[in-house]
Amino acid sequence: MKQQAGYFTPAALTLSVVTAALADGIPQGVPVRRALWLGAVSTVCLCILSALAAAALRDKAPSLAVRLALTAGLFMELVHTLVQAQGLCTAEFSSMALLGFLPLLLWAGWCIRPASWNASARVLWWFVAVGGVVCLLGLAGQLHWYRLFTPAQPTGTNWSVPVYAEYFAGALLCSTRSARHTVWLPVWGFAVQAAALMGSALLFGSGAYPRLELLRAWSGGSFSRMDALLLLLWLLCAVYRVAMLCAAIRLLWQQPEAEVQP
Image (cartoon, rainbow, N blue to C red; front, top):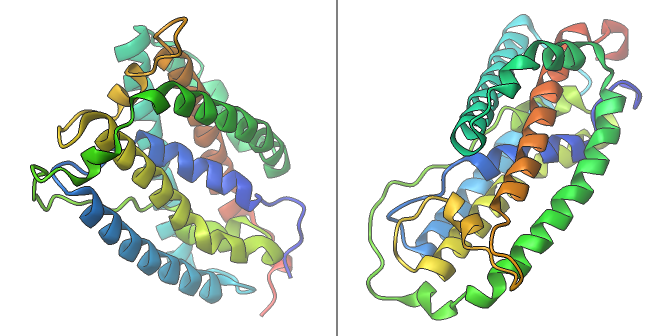
């Protein structure tokens, strides 16, 4: 039986998934109601697959092939997040600072225990909650519900489902007691995508706008630009995700065999 100490909490993995989902694009050219139905069905399928993976890995030593597959998935997520974060730094802040402290970031992720990242996740969740409330308050006055039902909505089929390595690695990254909660990680990914899709439709109607335009439309009456602060918050979460994924890869390979019983 795996012990609680030395493993990630479901909240830490959820923050990682939410960070990735916030950066990924929303469906373009798909009616809102159809996109939500497709997303809900896809989420149910992913939850089932995640539950099957958790059941297969629970209390069992993973094979070399499983470790390699999960490591490849986690590493691809790490690289993808780095590319997104650096692209944002370059485009919005004209900065290469992320590459400057990348070695230190990877070293910290490799050396610091998961318990420390769990504590950081709890703090970051408060920042994310406050940022979400601030964003909603700044956009609330511009939302128009009738735009969800405009007959001019496009009928494209370019739908994509966000799939992240955390969905299937949760059983090995969390303790046995909390691993069952990682089955619901796809719900969080879909919730972020659905919120962004509905926000875009309520603000812009059927027009295809980048997700960043949701932040640029923010207005609080006294000043109109909140996108820089919210983007910095996402960058902070992205830095956390990179370090956490690095720690997850180490945990995947250094998990003591004595803690896994048949």
